[in-house]
Length: 207
Image (tube, rainbow, N blue to C red):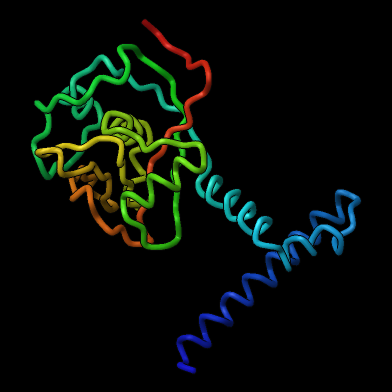
């Protein structure tokens, strides 16, 4: 076995040990039996394993609330975000109308921890009860949380622009915030995050 593979297994073993230790301490503090509860975690059946992974994916970076003004043009929304670099001029593009109000939405940053296609990502988001964020929602997210994209690559699969062949992505570094557009039908590497929307049954709106 290659040395780097052995190191990888040792790293995961260490992570697993620390996780079990932390969970054991928390369970004991709550007066419960660690053996009984952790047996489901250590040797899960396929259904339990799937439920655990769903929880991990849903809570990868938590959730946040963002107010989106769907009445504004893309040019106005882009200017609000104050992005340093923009790869394509999409300011004059007209997107399909979603809403005609200012609405507070709940957003989640989803990390799949593996390579996925756009189709696979959307199917998994739908399975989790989410929908892919649109370009305006991505831009308002970037405006409210400008530092997120300095360390993460954030994709919005809910809108197609640039001849309907591309989707928006926020990324950057310590000094630059970028708005770029990449081929929609892409195979995304495991490092990407996908911005998704969880719409409540009744949203807060301002006419």
